Image 1 (cartoon, one colour):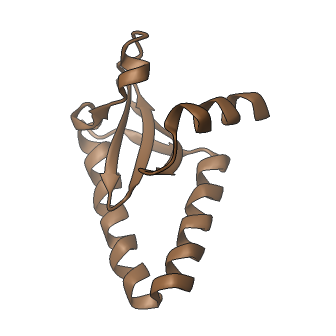
Image 2 (tube, helix red, strand yellow; image 1 turned 90 degrees about the vertical axis):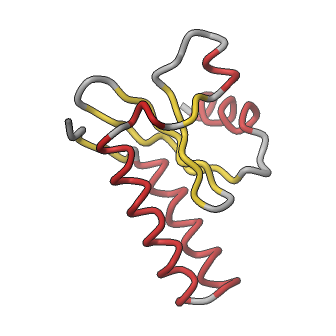
Amino acid sequence: MTHRVVVLDRAKDDFKDLKKYVRQNFGEAVWRTVHGEYQVAFQRIQQAPQAGNPIECLADLGMTHVRYVLVRQTRLVYEFDDSLVIVHMFIGTRQDFRAHLLKRLLRG
């Protein structure tokens, strides 16, 4: 079953920042390659969102419907149900996920 994918505005901002960073530091050709990898990741979560990796600190709280897929050094974090995938954020693997999540929640 194909799920509808919705990207939240904050996640779109994350993606724009990621694009800017890659283009400035690695060039347009690398960005095109990375962008293609994101397209594959989106297709994967659209087809089988349950195949993503659980986020331990959230799974411990019973939130098993929140997952991530890794694209290079960035986690694409999403939640899903029977028909919908909601992309919440793109976060680097070196960033503290808990701190970033708390910051997002407090920003409202």
